[in-house]
Image (cartoon, rainbow, N blue to C red; front, side, top):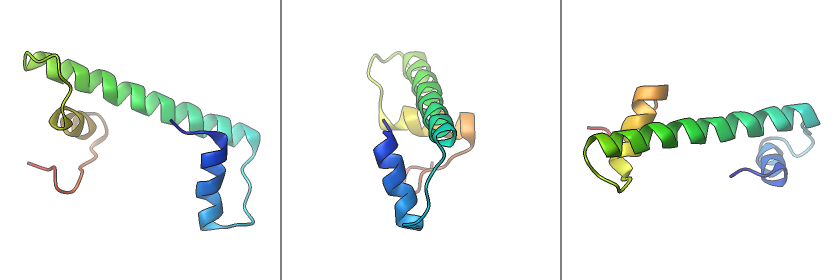
Length: 77
């Protein structure tokens, strides 16, 4: 998902002189992994609820909206 190297690249795009503490890197990576896990699990449940074994974009969009109030432009009903 997100490696320490990629995380540092993202930070460097904002400020090339900025560095993240190792504990901060670990925390961000844990939060990222948990976020993806939570949204994926909810989205799979939504797909199953509509009697499908195929996870579709609409399941992810609905899951993001329900769990985190995140709306993706172009996918909002």
